[in-house]
Image 1 (cartoon, rainbow, N blue to C red):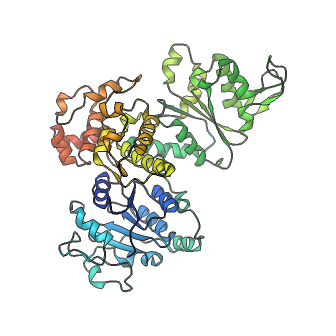
Image 2 (tube, helix red, strand yellow):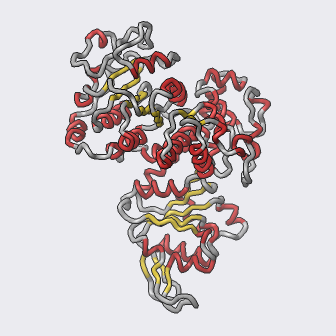
Image 3 (cartoon, helix red, strand yellow):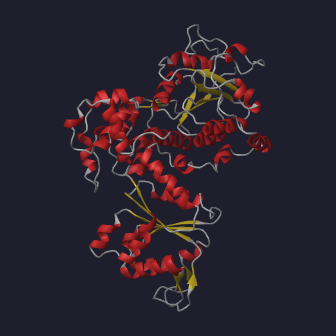
Length: 511
C-alpha cells in the first residue's frame, strides 16, 4: 500500500469521527464529513489516498449511493466499516471490488486503535482484532475469501443492473456529487443539518421547491436563510436561471421601489435614464427579498400584486410589466406581531404565511454545530493554504458551550480566525476568539441566548429549569455521544422517560 498522505472519513456518528480521527491524526492530512454528498465533493476536490465509509447503520439506498461514489473514483483505497454479518463480497457490485475492502466491528466496540491499524495496514492485521473472527481482506486479493463469507446474514440488495449500467457509462471526469443530485432529502444534506425536526422541515421545503409557489423564510440574522433560498433555487425547475438576492434592509427606503420595479427617465431627480428593476433582471429565475419587514405599506401593496397577479409598473410609468421570476421572501422577525402592531399588511401576511418555514437559530440546532464546524475548518484551511490534521474534542466542546447569537455566520467567522491561529495543524480551544472561549456572548434579541449559559454538566433535569427540556436533552445527548443510557443517567431520569421526551420534542433520529 502506498504512503498515506490524505485520508477522508465519512460517518454520521460524531463519536466514530472523533475517536477514529484522533487515532489517525498525525499520520496523514485528515478530512472528515457527515454525509455522502459532502464526501463525494471532498473526494473530487482533494483526491484522498484512502476513504473510510462508516456504513454500519446505512439503509439500502445509502449503500447504493456509497457504491455509486466509489465506482466514480479511481486510484482511491475505499474501506467500508460494517457490523459483522451486514454485507458479503458477493453483495458488492463488481465495478468496486478492485478498490474496496470491508472491516467489520460491533456497534459497541471501542478498540479504535486496532480498527485504525486494520485500515492503514491491511497486510498486518492484529491477532486480537476488532473483527471478531472476521478476516481483514486486502484490496489487492483476487480471490473472494469463502471462509469470511460463511455464517454472514443475507446481504443487503445490490445496485440494480440499470444503476450499474448508468454508472459504467458515465465519464470518468464527471463530478462525484452529480451522482446523488437527484436523491430525495439532498437539501437536508447540503444544509448540513443533523437536527431531526429541521430535516423534516427541509424535506417539506424540498417538495415546495419543485413547484412554482412563493415561499416565506423566517429566521434570525445569520441563521442561513440566504443559503437555504439558494438551495430552493437549485432544487427547482429554474436552477439554470439567475438567482438574485435583494437585501431590502440595506437599501434607502426611497430607493427600494426603484430597485425592485425599476423606473423610467425623469421619474425623480436622479433618474437620468430608464432602469430595469430586480424583478425584470431576474428573468425566469428566483428573487430573494430579504428583510421584507422593512417595506412600507405602499410597497407591500405592490409586492402583494406581484405575488398574486405577476404584474407591476416601473416608477413613473403607466406601462404594466409582467413578472416571470419566482419570489422567496425572508424576514428576521416573526410577521404576526408586526401585523398586530399595524406595521405589516394582513393581506400580504396571509398570502405569504401559506408556505412559511421557520429556520431555528444555531443554539437550538446543537447537533449541527459539529458537522458545520468541520466543514468550515476544511473550507477555510483549503482557502488559506493551511494544513489542518486534527480537530480536537476540546475545540468542538468549546463551540458547543457558546450560544452563537450571530448564528452560523458568527461561527464561520470564529472558525476562520481559529484556522489562522491553529498550532501545527491542530484546532485547539485557544485558537478561537477570546469571547467564545470565555463565553461572553454579544447582544441577542432572544432570551434563550442568556439562558443558554445556565446549563451546566452534571445537574439533574429537575434542577435545570432555565431552558426548555428540549434544549437540555439535546445538549445532554451531544455530551454523551447520543447514548440514551448515559444521557438518562446524566439527566437523572429513566431511559423510558428520556425516550418519551425525545419523541415528544421530535428529536428521535430518522429511521
